[in-house]
Image (cartoon, rainbow, N blue to C red; front, side):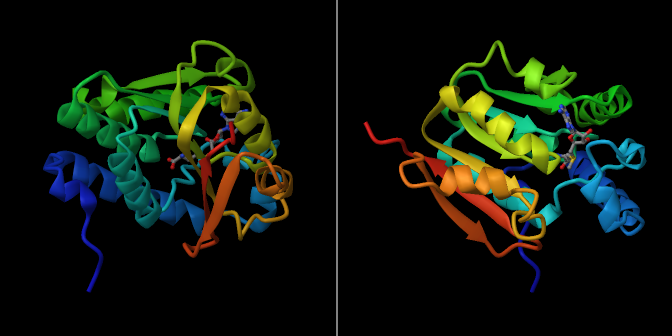
Length: 227
Ligand SMILES: C[S@@+](CC[C@H](N)C(=O)[O-])C[C@H]1O[C@@H](n2cnc3c(N)ncnc32)[C@H](O)[C@@H]1O
């Protein structure tokens, strides 16, 4: 039996569910043509400029559930691309705000202008439930995340691996006690993630860490610094 879709339980409109299905399908189709070398050279490889590389749907569902369960209202996403995972983040934050009040925000980051433009188009197709929540910061996240960051409840690291540790270190001063950090492909890209994983797993780092058995691994860490 297939897993239920958590978005259905939150009455997410049908047109958003079908848009997500088609975006995931498009992403998977593209990925079959991406080589290991493309991933390894992703920082400089122009071949990745028009690729979705969206977080897999089962991982998006898990992230959605995490945000709902922690009532996260300020989420940072490192690596937005065409904004597929961002839709889940925004829907979960919007549901939290409906349930418990207050304002919510998803800060997206993307340095490819064409991807940013396309992402905004998909968010507009979803409607205000998504487009009103997302604050997309265009440009290199090492600059765009330097300012205007309030307390962060949840951080998704879905970015080229050399950017993962610099992103975490930039956001870390704003992480709330108990903030959740998700990093994708930490088994499949263990070599690329070495610096990040060494940093988070070092004694006294302030992070508790768990590798979840999703395809190519998904790291779930919680920021719990000792007083
Ligand atoms: C794996 S994709 C993100 C996929 C997206 N989270 C999703 O599930 O739809 C990573 C993205 O990070 C972007 N990126 C890489 N380095 C960046 C940087 N320094 N600043 C901003 N964006 C960056 C890439 O252009 C790429 O679109």
